[in-house]
Length: 337
Image (cartoon, rainbow, N blue to C red):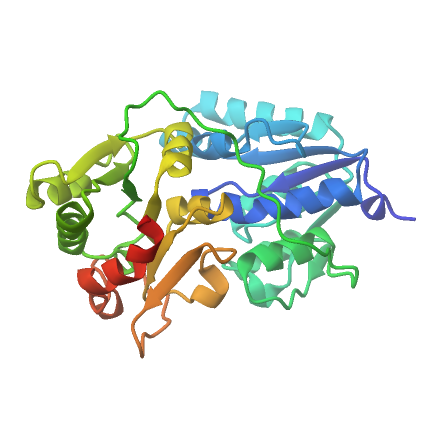
């Protein structure tokens, strides 16, 4: 029997970003169920490591400081740090490395581990097909949603696909920030502009929520990216919008406390879906069947005739603009009781 079929030490590479890390969590829960005695480590960029803290299925979190290395990539000290990282990774002596990301950087990390077997998706499922050249095993997964694709990879495409709902096992979060007892949480920013709902629409929705329900909209954002949330607050009536610059643990806690959430195809929305928070998701150029919220607690709104393009444009797509604040409110309203 090959070591990859009964591995003692497993490396997972999913370096980022938030939603993608969350979507890979159920696969790691499956790995733990399949190999209960294995040592399982996850290589991740430090920005997203908080999503993995206290995860019962992981033995080790391995920070991969790619941003730091890129900033000083020509400096000899930087190369020494990379060499030290690779040596440390190899010293763990992994039997199996699973690349859930399908990019060259994640495949290189998996391969650099020296694992006896490096596995990933087959070429057609890779965002960067050359990454597949670094795999020993390529899995032809056939599911639609990315969570299920990841779970298939964790089982190497074998027929014994796990039964039962996905397990995310996210941390409890940091409850140190002050928030009202009842509020609607919105994370208005997405990874690229075409997936964003216009900030004016968030401001209009906040006005409706405040006027009709007396509920504030809490506009969450990273502390370094407050400009969109500030615009929403300035355009809404006084008191209708509360700014919430947050760390990941603070975002997790705010999501758990929220009455409901309003989101787009972004990490905070997938976080809300993973903890089964009620809410709505506004989708446009990305396909809800593949990238939509997991589970049924969040209802997707998508304009009729919306085109799935995945084009990384800087401005909200026409299909995102086609969803009005009133339409969003009417879908959200039953969840506010």
